[in-house]
Every structure is written in C-alpha cells, then in structure tokens.
Figure (cartoon, rainbow, N blue to C red):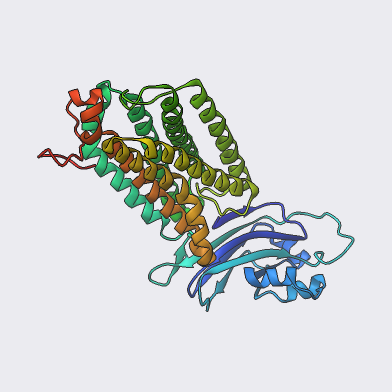
Length: 411
C-alpha cells in the first residue's frame, strides 16, 4: 500500500515495503504525537531488499546496532511532517521501511506510548514529479484493466444479442454455453472491479478494498466454473465412450462418475484458492507463488492439464470421424491453454526482475484465458461439427467459423 495509517509501533517493526523506481521518488511522513517520537528518538531506516537479505543471511553476525547502521537511507522523525527523497535508483527494486528508536536494541524493552503517523510513498510520474501512488510492480495495470474493460464492452455490443438468442434456443450444447457465458461475465466483472479499484488507488493510494476483494471473488468463482465445465465435458466424453455407441451426437455426457470426480477436484481447487487469499492479502488475483497454497495450486493445474490431455488423446486416437477428431484436438488446445498458462507464466517470470513478475503473470494469464474462451465459443458455436452431428444444425447460429457460408461473423 502506498498510503499507511500506522497506530501501534513497537521498538522494531517492518512497516512497509515498496518498489521504488526512477529519480525523485518520495517518502512522506506525518506524525500525530511528535513529542513521543522525539522522546523515543524515533527514526525510519530504509533498506534495499537485496541488502537487507544479505544482512539476514550473511555468515557474519551483526549486532542490532550494526545492522541498522547499514541502512541505505535514514530519516530522524522529529517534525510533524517530513519528506525523504529516494533518488539515483538504477532500476526498480523493493525497499523496506523499518521503524527504529532508542529502545530497539535494548534487551529489556518496556512498553510505552505508541506513535501514530501517516505514511505516503510515491514514485515519479511521466513528467518526473513524485505523484504516482503505484509501485513499480503495479505500474501499467490500471491502463491494462481499462483497455480490457473497453474490449469486453465493445465485444458485448457486437455479440451479446446474437449470443443471447442462441442460448435461448435449446440444443445439445445449451448447458455448456450457459456455463461458459456465466464464467465470461464473471471474468468481465472481475476486470471491471479491478479497474475501479486501481482508478481509486491512483488518486489516494488506498483504492477501494471492497472492489479489490470483489474482483478476486469473481475470478475465483469463474475459475471454479471453468474447471467444472472442462472437467465434466472431458470426463463425460471419456467415460461415456466406454458405455455408449459411437453414433450418438456429441454433447455434455454427465454421468455420476464424471460429476463426482469434477466435484472433488473443484472442491480441492476452491480450498486452495481461498487458502491462497489468506496467505497473501494484497488485492490481485494472481499471486507471487511463494506460499504453500500457491505452489499446490500450480501443481494441481499442471496435473489437471496432463490428465485432460491424456483422456482426450485416448479419444482422439480411436475416433474415426475427421470432423470430431478436429473438434477434440481444438478442445484439448483450449483446455491446455486454460490450465497451463498460469504455471508456465509463473515459471517464465522467474527470469525477469522481481518488479516485472506480477505484471507478466497477471496480464499474461488474463489474455491467455480470454483466448481459451474465444476458442471454446468458436468451437461450440461452429457449424463445422454441429451442422453434421447435433440438433444445433436446425437453428441459425449467429457466430460461425464455417468456411462454406457467406456473411459470417467471427467471434
């Protein structure tokens, strides 16, 4: 957070960490009870994250006083309002801000009156003025969510009415289209809530925490719906193939076994997603993967991608119809893209600097999952397969990819 109201400061405390960038970044402090701060000889010590970790992990033992004397910047808190300029930063990196006073390094510390103060951390904007509340790891996300919301709005204006008319007409993929559309609406709602949060954050450094939490909730529900949809389809086709004739039209074959497996996996992912939120309370949907829940979640997605790929491969190898085989191959690509984009991007992000990782993961995952949804829509609304094998051939489909029809629209 760029704006902090701190009310319970102990003798030694990490107050905040912030990714500064460029020249003339700023740390602003407003003290409410300055007399207490002066009595305690209160100070703020700023460490570059790498330097602080070297001190913590180094072979040489440093005393408390020696450790804090090695701070890159120090501010003595003796005025009601003070500013500290952080300059000559060669590249964006994380800085830790510690509160230290004369009691910090004493073994027998006794409780005393707390110091209350506000802290604002600012990066330089495009013109070099320290007015930007976003840390280096968050810069650009506000503009990205604006463009994403704009893209959703334009797409809705073009396709919403046609899609709604198609959903109202029954067919073998009616349930699939409804679940897919609800998941898409939740993704759009998450993007809009994130945009509102970042818009507020850009003005005051606090944002709208409720909107940030709402965005995460929408994303979690959307992830759960898509998992249930893809898993139920794949398991239904795999299990259904063992029991049913090959001539039956392709549709959502929901069986007790496939439903049971889907429910167990969905409950597991739901638990891990909620656990991840408690491990990292920052308002973003794709976390830094340092916690156990994040690691387990990535492992689950990899296992799901491999399992679905193996199941679909078995179907593809025995399928005689070229049309259906192409359908299954395209569906497999959409599944693999949906589940593996997050683990792959998290792995690729390791080679980049720390401040770039969150943006790479967030933007990359959202775009990949949007592409996956587009592939699924084109697949389930295409004339190419259902024109031949399902009852959808009896209705007019608004969104087609058939090469044999003129005046067609592409989603």
